[in-house]
Length: 253
Image (cartoon, rainbow, N blue to C red; front, side):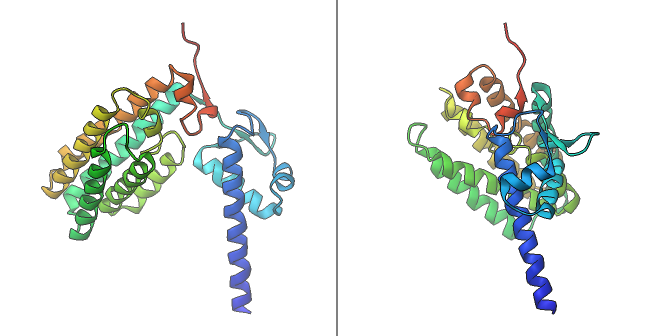
């Protein structure tokens, strides 16, 4: 009886995750228009899963910030102003700065420090290839791993949850705007700056320099700001930004 109940629960979780991923893709690809009402019954028919997983998926996407509840019932696809996007990136940088400070003040383990150093070394090798031959997917993977290790060093579940929430917004995650950066003629310079910041924050954490580690990570997020500013002036670059269909762009002269 217990095993049967566990299997049933596992299936429910799998269906919820599947519904959540499918619904997120619909939102991010623009197949559900910004501001469009999204009902439970509509998604049951469209995704081909039962009501309970769909209901949970809708709630989880609201928690991620991609949907918002509406008074008449159901949800609508959220839109973001340019200001809100910049603020989301700033918030992520602030939280990562706090993570770096906590890691420095509390003392990171030798294992975490070694894993972070290995990750940076691997990123150095990718960047050393030069802008023309860089393996962008590999760089994005390593960059995400480094940021995850940094968050783990802080040893704070509360902070980790808040970072997970803000990074769930597709345009606010640490590597979201790297593809835009790849279009820049200054790509090699920007990558070298980012890598230097990775090296410096790790050194600050090792030396227990909390304030310096925090300042470096907050400045590190400014690279994403710069990439976003570039994207907002060029539609081809904007198309590379995850979730760009959700951003309501202001009219430029």
